[in-house]
Amino acid sequence: MGLFTRQSTAVDLRDRDYVLTGCPVVAQDDMLVLVDLTVRLAVRPPREDESDALGYDPADERSVHAVCVLVLRQLGIAVPSDELLVGRARIVEAVEQGLTFAPVGAGVKGRVAQVEVRPYDAAGATFDHEFRVASRP
Image 1 (cartoon, rainbow, N blue to C red):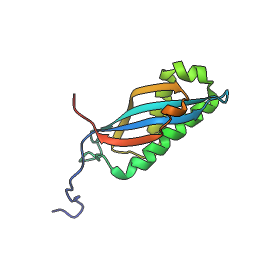
Image 2 (image 1 turned 180 degrees about the vertical axis):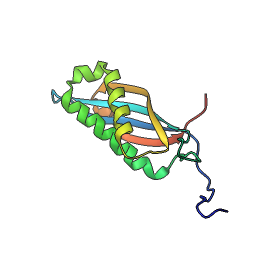
Image 3 (image 1 turned 60 degrees about the vertical axis):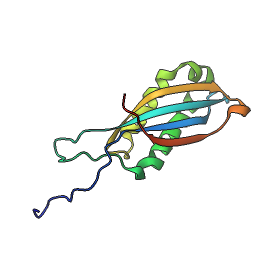
């Protein structure tokens, strides 16, 4: 082993799905909507200056969750509820941009796989999130 060689550790190269369910977002017109979001966190290949892929780091999960919720709530401040209910492309762009700029998840690339926005319903309001290993197509 050379002086500056990295020890080979087991790097998790499995993609993950981050699933956010029922995230409450207050829109610009003070209406409450619920957002369901699935983000595919795909392990990115190593860059030219890296010998190995960084892989998936479970320590980033809290930060990824915080970034997604923050971006959704900031978007809500600027957009009326009727636009949120039909403007899914705007949500996708904001979340993907937030994950790109955030200093977390260096080993993965986040892409929104699914987004659904619905009016607030007390019966269906369950705010939850999870990370799960993504199934390969």
